[in-house]
Image (cartoon, rainbow, N blue to C red; front, side, top):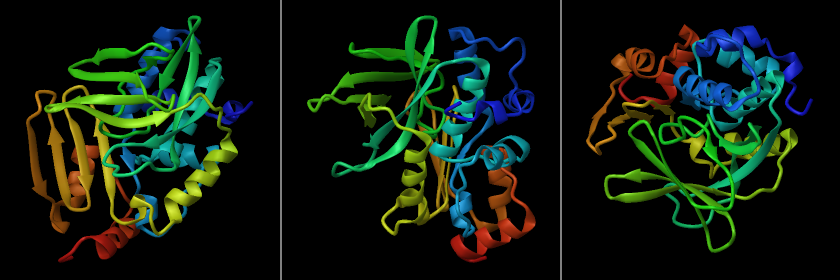
Amino acid sequence: MTWNGEELDIAAYLAKVGYEGEAKPDFDTLRALHRAHVAAIPFENLEMMVGRPVPLDLAALQDKLVRQRRGGYCYEQNLLFAAALERIGFPVTGLGARVRAGASSRRAVTHMLLKVEADGQQWHCDVGFGAEGLLEPILMGDDEVDVRQGAWRFGIVQAANGARVLRTEHADGWFDLYEYTWEERLPVDYVVMNHYTSTHPKSSFIRRPVLQRAAPDARRMLVGEHLTVTRPDGTSGERDVSADELGDVLAREFGIELNADDYAELIRKHYAGA
């Protein structure tokens, strides 16, 4: 199996994301699992922030994302999701994307997403982009896509270079998230991407804590000390989080709990005044 689905404790994974009922390789299951995973497992880069590497083997992913109250970033999230889908019986293909959000120039391919077949169609799945990411699968193909997932609006358009561009609607119009092509990526490709993203001096993920959570009612982001909660109507609340309240914010807003040593190291390295 490409994604090592046979090694996954599928019962523990389904319990973690709160999925009930029979898991079958059909679109209803795919949609429900995608929504459940996004709701249950937050986006975070805290391994790097406390000075540890980010392992991508399935045993490590299960221990962190399933057994602990932790999250992960795109490779961790989508590799776990791919293993679960493969175990259930879905055909799953890995893809790569260039992140456009906030970019002033064209970036390298460093993001992971999935192409999943269900009910005779191909679906764009991505449980690892963070607060502005998809809540559920979106149809893949050559046509433009414009859909609502709850109160959020997403679209896919064709770029001049032939890539597909996933975007979401902001209060002031469309906002590009990333561009991708149909080129298949293998698990070893994500190992290389992960090494760059988690260690290279120019990687944004090694500079400051980044925690995000997508939900039907709000997009939550903690970047460094700055917490932002954005609503579907475009309104948002912003504030700085002090070192004293960080633990409460991690648990309340993101469902994350660190052990005492990791929490102390995170505070020491990245939060002023502690």
